[in-house]
Image 1: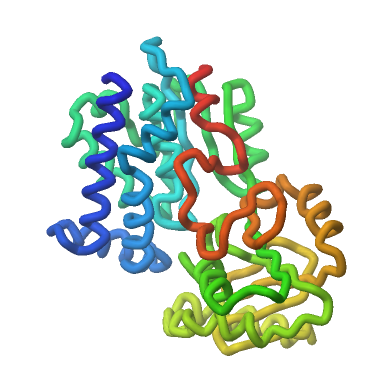
Image 2: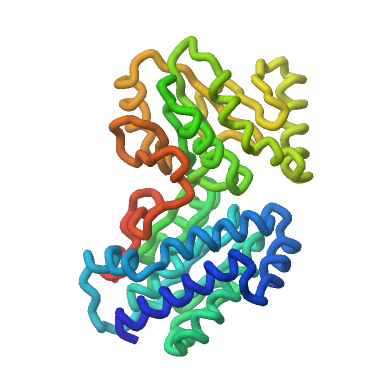
Length: 338
Protein backbone atom coordinates (compact mmCIF):
# COMPACT_ATOMS: atom_id res chain seq x y z
CA UNK A 1 0.00 0.00 0.00
CA UNK A 2 1.18 3.50 -0.82
CA UNK A 3 1.20 6.25 1.81
CA UNK A 4 -1.79 8.03 0.27
CA UNK A 5 -3.81 4.82 0.29
CA UNK A 6 -3.09 4.40 3.97
CA UNK A 7 -4.05 8.00 4.68
CA UNK A 8 -7.30 7.67 2.70
CA UNK A 9 -8.24 4.57 4.68
CA UNK A 10 -7.72 6.29 8.02
CA UNK A 11 -9.78 9.27 6.90
CA UNK A 12 -12.64 6.87 6.18
CA UNK A 13 -12.10 5.10 9.49
CA UNK A 14 -12.20 8.46 11.26
CA UNK A 15 -15.53 9.24 9.62
CA UNK A 16 -16.87 5.86 10.79
CA UNK A 17 -15.65 6.52 14.36
CA UNK A 18 -17.47 9.84 14.34
CA UNK A 19 -20.70 8.17 13.26
CA UNK A 20 -20.25 5.46 15.89
CA UNK A 21 -19.73 8.08 18.62
CA UNK A 22 -23.08 9.70 17.87
CA UNK A 23 -25.08 6.48 17.69
CA UNK A 24 -25.96 7.08 14.04
CA UNK A 25 -25.03 3.53 13.01
CA UNK A 26 -26.05 0.11 14.24
CA UNK A 27 -22.75 -0.88 15.87
CA UNK A 28 -23.47 0.50 19.35
CA UNK A 29 -23.27 -3.06 20.66
CA UNK A 30 -19.47 -2.78 20.61
CA UNK A 31 -19.64 0.19 22.96
CA UNK A 32 -21.86 -1.74 25.36
CA UNK A 33 -19.58 -4.78 25.14
CA UNK A 34 -16.50 -2.70 26.00
CA UNK A 35 -18.38 -1.12 28.92
CA UNK A 36 -19.44 -4.50 30.32
CA UNK A 37 -15.84 -5.68 30.00
CA UNK A 38 -14.47 -2.67 31.92
CA UNK A 39 -16.79 -0.55 34.08
CA UNK A 40 -14.49 2.48 33.82
CA UNK A 41 -15.17 2.56 30.06
CA UNK A 42 -18.62 4.10 30.25
CA UNK A 43 -20.46 4.67 26.95
CA UNK A 44 -19.91 8.40 27.49
CA UNK A 45 -16.15 7.93 27.82
CA UNK A 46 -15.94 5.56 24.85
CA UNK A 47 -17.97 7.88 22.65
CA UNK A 48 -15.85 10.81 23.79
CA UNK A 49 -12.69 8.94 22.73
CA UNK A 50 -14.24 7.98 19.39
CA UNK A 51 -15.29 11.58 18.77
CA UNK A 52 -11.80 12.92 19.54
CA UNK A 53 -10.20 10.42 17.18
CA UNK A 54 -12.70 11.22 14.45
CA UNK A 55 -11.75 14.88 14.78
CA UNK A 56 -8.06 13.99 14.51
CA UNK A 57 -8.33 11.62 11.52
CA UNK A 58 -9.18 14.18 8.85
CA UNK A 59 -7.38 14.60 5.55
CA UNK A 60 -5.88 18.01 6.49
CA UNK A 61 -4.60 16.67 9.83
CA UNK A 62 -3.14 13.50 8.34
CA UNK A 63 -1.42 15.42 5.55
CA UNK A 64 -0.02 18.01 7.95
CA UNK A 65 1.30 15.18 10.11
CA UNK A 66 2.85 13.08 7.35
CA UNK A 67 4.16 15.84 5.08
CA UNK A 68 7.05 16.52 7.45
CA UNK A 69 8.48 13.03 6.91
CA UNK A 70 9.96 11.08 4.02
CA UNK A 71 8.33 7.70 3.42
CA UNK A 72 10.14 4.99 1.48
CA UNK A 73 9.09 1.64 0.08
CA UNK A 74 11.63 -0.39 2.03
CA UNK A 75 10.78 -3.80 3.45
CA UNK A 76 8.33 -3.26 6.34
CA UNK A 77 9.42 -4.15 9.86
CA UNK A 78 7.22 -5.79 12.48
CA UNK A 79 6.75 -3.55 15.51
CA UNK A 80 5.49 -5.04 18.76
CA UNK A 81 3.22 -2.54 20.51
CA UNK A 82 2.44 -3.25 24.16
CA UNK A 83 -0.51 -1.09 25.13
CA UNK A 84 -1.80 0.32 28.39
CA UNK A 85 -5.48 0.07 29.27
CA UNK A 86 -6.22 3.05 31.49
CA UNK A 87 -8.58 4.86 29.06
CA UNK A 88 -10.43 3.72 25.93
CA UNK A 89 -8.16 3.33 22.87
CA UNK A 90 -5.14 4.65 24.75
CA UNK A 91 -2.82 2.71 22.40
CA UNK A 92 -4.52 3.84 19.20
CA UNK A 93 -1.94 6.49 18.33
CA UNK A 94 0.88 3.93 18.34
CA UNK A 95 -1.30 1.58 16.29
CA UNK A 96 -1.99 4.10 13.53
CA UNK A 97 1.56 5.48 13.55
CA UNK A 98 3.05 2.05 12.88
CA UNK A 99 0.62 1.48 10.02
CA UNK A 100 0.96 4.94 8.49
CA UNK A 101 4.74 4.50 8.58
CA UNK A 102 4.31 1.43 6.37
CA UNK A 103 5.33 -1.09 9.01
CA UNK A 104 3.44 -4.04 10.48
CA UNK A 105 1.91 -3.86 13.94
CA UNK A 106 1.94 -6.75 16.41
CA UNK A 107 -0.35 -5.57 19.21
CA UNK A 108 -0.47 -6.91 22.72
CA UNK A 109 -3.56 -5.44 24.34
CA UNK A 110 -4.14 -4.65 27.98
CA UNK A 111 -6.73 -6.92 29.58
CA UNK A 112 -8.66 -3.73 30.41
CA UNK A 113 -8.97 -2.56 26.79
CA UNK A 114 -9.16 -5.57 24.48
CA UNK A 115 -12.53 -4.99 22.82
CA UNK A 116 -12.45 -1.75 20.85
CA UNK A 117 -9.18 -1.88 18.91
CA UNK A 118 -9.65 -5.32 17.28
CA UNK A 119 -13.14 -4.21 16.22
CA UNK A 120 -11.80 -1.02 14.63
CA UNK A 121 -8.94 -2.94 13.04
CA UNK A 122 -11.49 -5.14 11.25
CA UNK A 123 -13.29 -2.03 10.06
CA UNK A 124 -9.99 -0.69 8.73
CA UNK A 125 -9.33 -3.96 6.89
CA UNK A 126 -12.82 -3.77 5.40
CA UNK A 127 -11.99 -0.28 4.14
CA UNK A 128 -8.57 -1.27 2.76
CA UNK A 129 -7.84 -5.01 2.55
CA UNK A 130 -4.09 -4.39 2.23
CA UNK A 131 -4.00 -3.80 6.00
CA UNK A 132 -4.87 -7.43 6.69
CA UNK A 133 -1.27 -8.60 6.38
CA UNK A 134 -0.07 -5.58 8.39
CA UNK A 135 -2.12 -6.12 11.58
CA UNK A 136 -1.78 -8.87 14.15
CA UNK A 137 -2.99 -9.22 17.74
CA UNK A 138 -1.38 -11.60 20.20
CA UNK A 139 -2.25 -12.83 23.68
CA UNK A 140 0.82 -15.04 23.83
CA UNK A 141 4.48 -14.26 24.39
CA UNK A 142 5.60 -11.89 21.65
CA UNK A 143 7.96 -13.33 19.05
CA UNK A 144 9.26 -12.47 15.59
CA UNK A 145 9.38 -8.69 15.79
CA UNK A 146 11.99 -6.07 14.94
CA UNK A 147 11.24 -3.22 17.34
CA UNK A 148 9.13 -2.48 20.42
CA UNK A 149 6.89 0.32 21.65
CA UNK A 150 5.76 -0.38 25.21
CA UNK A 151 3.68 1.74 27.56
CA UNK A 152 3.30 0.97 31.25
CA UNK A 153 4.11 2.02 34.78
CA UNK A 154 7.52 2.81 36.24
CA UNK A 155 7.62 -0.75 37.56
CA UNK A 156 6.67 -2.47 34.31
CA UNK A 157 9.17 -0.31 32.42
CA UNK A 158 11.96 -2.14 34.26
CA UNK A 159 10.55 -5.42 32.94
CA UNK A 160 10.27 -3.96 29.44
CA UNK A 161 13.85 -2.70 29.49
CA UNK A 162 15.11 -6.09 30.65
CA UNK A 163 13.30 -8.11 27.98
CA UNK A 164 13.27 -5.68 25.08
CA UNK A 165 16.44 -3.67 25.63
CA UNK A 166 18.24 -5.45 22.77
CA UNK A 167 15.64 -4.22 20.24
CA UNK A 168 15.13 -0.69 18.96
CA UNK A 169 12.52 0.56 21.41
CA UNK A 170 10.41 3.29 22.90
CA UNK A 171 9.54 2.47 26.51
CA UNK A 172 7.20 4.82 28.34
CA UNK A 173 6.81 5.22 32.10
CA UNK A 174 4.34 6.99 34.38
CA UNK A 175 3.53 10.58 33.49
CA UNK A 176 1.04 13.07 34.89
CA UNK A 177 -0.27 16.45 33.86
CA UNK A 178 -0.45 19.65 35.88
CA UNK A 179 -2.17 23.03 35.75
CA UNK A 180 -0.71 26.38 36.73
CA UNK A 181 -3.23 28.91 37.99
CA UNK A 182 -2.48 32.61 38.41
CA UNK A 183 -5.76 33.76 39.93
CA UNK A 184 -6.72 35.59 36.75
CA UNK A 185 -8.53 32.67 35.09
CA UNK A 186 -12.04 33.24 33.76
CA UNK A 187 -14.98 31.11 34.81
CA UNK A 188 -14.90 29.57 31.31
CA UNK A 189 -11.25 28.58 31.70
CA UNK A 190 -11.87 27.00 35.10
CA UNK A 191 -14.84 25.11 33.69
CA UNK A 192 -12.59 23.86 30.90
CA UNK A 193 -10.03 22.85 33.53
CA UNK A 194 -12.74 20.69 35.09
CA UNK A 195 -12.93 18.79 31.79
CA UNK A 196 -9.16 18.28 31.97
CA UNK A 197 -9.49 16.88 35.48
CA UNK A 198 -12.61 14.71 35.27
CA UNK A 199 -12.74 13.31 31.72
CA UNK A 200 -12.11 9.55 31.77
CA UNK A 201 -12.47 9.84 35.59
CA UNK A 202 -8.96 11.30 35.67
CA UNK A 203 -7.36 8.02 34.60
CA UNK A 204 -5.34 9.34 31.65
CA UNK A 205 -1.79 10.66 31.69
CA UNK A 206 -3.16 13.85 30.11
CA UNK A 207 -5.68 14.38 32.92
CA UNK A 208 -4.73 17.08 35.40
CA UNK A 209 -3.70 15.43 38.65
CA UNK A 210 -2.12 18.48 40.31
CA UNK A 211 -2.64 22.24 40.37
CA UNK A 212 -0.20 24.98 41.32
CA UNK A 213 -1.58 28.28 42.56
CA UNK A 214 -0.23 31.49 44.13
CA UNK A 215 0.40 31.39 47.86
CA UNK A 216 -2.65 32.51 49.81
CA UNK A 217 -5.10 31.90 46.97
CA UNK A 218 -8.77 31.17 47.56
CA UNK A 219 -10.30 28.00 46.12
CA UNK A 220 -13.77 29.50 45.69
CA UNK A 221 -13.48 30.20 41.96
CA UNK A 222 -11.79 26.83 41.37
CA UNK A 223 -14.61 24.90 43.05
CA UNK A 224 -17.21 26.91 41.13
CA UNK A 225 -15.48 25.82 37.92
CA UNK A 226 -15.55 22.19 39.02
CA UNK A 227 -19.31 22.24 39.67
CA UNK A 228 -20.21 21.30 36.08
CA UNK A 229 -18.90 17.79 36.83
CA UNK A 230 -20.87 17.27 40.06
CA UNK A 231 -22.79 14.32 38.59
CA UNK A 232 -19.60 12.25 38.41
CA UNK A 233 -20.21 11.23 42.01
CA UNK A 234 -23.19 9.16 40.81
CA UNK A 235 -20.84 6.66 39.16
CA UNK A 236 -20.46 3.77 41.58
CA UNK A 237 -16.82 3.07 40.77
CA UNK A 238 -15.90 6.72 41.18
CA UNK A 239 -17.76 7.19 44.47
CA UNK A 240 -16.13 4.06 45.88
CA UNK A 241 -12.73 5.62 45.26
CA UNK A 242 -13.87 8.99 46.63
CA UNK A 243 -15.20 7.41 49.84
CA UNK A 244 -12.13 5.22 50.28
CA UNK A 245 -9.58 7.99 49.75
CA UNK A 246 -11.50 10.38 51.98
CA UNK A 247 -11.64 7.82 54.78
CA UNK A 248 -7.92 7.00 54.52
CA UNK A 249 -6.91 10.67 54.62
CA UNK A 250 -9.24 11.55 57.50
CA UNK A 251 -8.10 8.55 59.55
CA UNK A 252 -4.55 9.81 59.08
CA UNK A 253 -5.57 13.36 60.13
CA UNK A 254 -4.56 14.74 56.74
CA UNK A 255 -6.20 18.11 56.00
CA UNK A 256 -8.45 18.10 52.92
CA UNK A 257 -10.56 20.47 50.90
CA UNK A 258 -13.77 18.73 49.83
CA UNK A 259 -16.69 19.76 47.61
CA UNK A 260 -18.43 16.38 48.02
CA UNK A 261 -17.20 14.97 44.70
CA UNK A 262 -13.53 16.02 44.61
CA UNK A 263 -10.83 16.02 47.27
CA UNK A 264 -7.97 18.51 47.25
CA UNK A 265 -4.83 17.54 49.15
CA UNK A 266 -1.72 19.65 49.56
CA UNK A 267 1.11 17.46 48.30
CA UNK A 268 4.45 17.81 46.52
CA UNK A 269 3.82 14.74 44.35
CA UNK A 270 2.38 14.67 40.86
CA UNK A 271 0.37 11.42 40.79
CA UNK A 272 -2.89 11.71 42.73
CA UNK A 273 -5.45 8.93 43.29
CA UNK A 274 -8.84 8.84 41.56
CA UNK A 275 -11.15 11.57 42.93
CA UNK A 276 -8.18 13.47 44.38
CA UNK A 277 -6.23 16.42 42.98
CA UNK A 278 -3.00 17.49 44.63
CA UNK A 279 -2.22 21.16 45.03
CA UNK A 280 0.88 23.16 45.84
CA UNK A 281 1.41 26.87 46.38
CA UNK A 282 4.09 28.89 44.62
CA UNK A 283 5.54 32.35 45.24
CA UNK A 284 7.28 33.11 41.95
CA UNK A 285 6.18 31.81 38.54
CA UNK A 286 9.77 31.69 37.26
CA UNK A 287 10.92 29.37 40.04
CA UNK A 288 7.86 27.18 39.44
CA UNK A 289 8.51 26.85 35.71
CA UNK A 290 12.14 26.01 36.48
CA UNK A 291 10.95 23.29 38.86
CA UNK A 292 8.64 21.82 36.24
CA UNK A 293 11.45 21.78 33.68
CA UNK A 294 13.54 19.80 36.16
CA UNK A 295 10.70 17.28 36.43
CA UNK A 296 9.86 17.25 32.72
CA UNK A 297 10.35 13.49 32.50
CA UNK A 298 7.41 13.06 34.93
CA UNK A 299 5.04 15.47 33.18
CA UNK A 300 2.95 14.82 30.07
CA UNK A 301 1.54 18.31 29.60
CA UNK A 302 1.02 21.59 31.43
CA UNK A 303 -2.21 23.59 31.35
CA UNK A 304 -2.09 27.33 31.88
CA UNK A 305 -1.06 30.66 30.47
CA UNK A 306 2.67 30.30 31.02
CA UNK A 307 5.77 30.11 28.85
CA UNK A 308 6.86 26.50 29.26
CA UNK A 309 7.26 23.40 27.11
CA UNK A 310 4.29 21.03 26.83
CA UNK A 311 1.82 23.83 27.64
CA UNK A 312 -1.74 23.47 26.33
CA UNK A 313 -4.87 25.57 26.68
CA UNK A 314 -7.50 24.97 29.33
CA UNK A 315 -9.82 22.18 28.22
CA UNK A 316 -7.46 20.88 25.53
CA UNK A 317 -5.57 18.09 27.28
CA UNK A 318 -7.69 15.34 25.71
CA UNK A 319 -7.44 16.81 22.19
CA UNK A 320 -3.81 16.23 21.21
CA UNK A 321 -2.79 16.64 17.59
CA UNK A 322 -1.47 13.65 15.67
CA UNK A 323 2.00 15.16 15.96
CA UNK A 324 1.76 15.59 19.75
CA UNK A 325 3.77 12.51 20.73
CA UNK A 326 3.57 10.91 24.16
CA UNK A 327 6.61 11.78 26.29
CA UNK A 328 7.81 14.10 23.53
CA UNK A 329 9.41 11.24 21.60
CA UNK A 330 8.78 11.34 17.85
CA UNK A 331 7.30 7.90 17.25
CA UNK A 332 7.03 8.36 13.50
CA UNK A 333 10.69 9.30 13.13
CA UNK A 334 11.65 6.26 15.23
CA UNK A 335 9.60 3.96 12.97
CA UNK A 336 10.84 5.41 9.69
CA UNK A 337 14.44 4.93 10.77
CA UNK A 338 14.17 1.23 11.64
